[in-house]
Length: 116
Image (cartoon, rainbow, N blue to C red; front, side, top):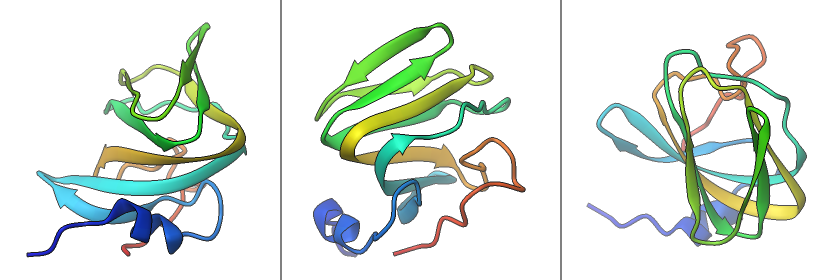
């Protein structure tokens, strides 16, 4: 058994919007990702989507609202709700999703989510 150091794992991630799995939890992927700019609007019809800001700030457009999240803040987007994260400057996030959930809501356009 070994603890996961999120800062060390994030140092291995080079690009933006490319989530990497760092741990498993009851059939869920725990991932880290660097974000900057806008991600496309999308939804997940069968699962909620958890965003936890580790560093930086993001705006999360959820339905008709925009939430502002900073370090230590999290938000769970309910399943089926259209959303998109945005970041004016680089931010670092922890994400939790059931294994196999496409990050774009569409398997054809989703990231591979490699394990690090």
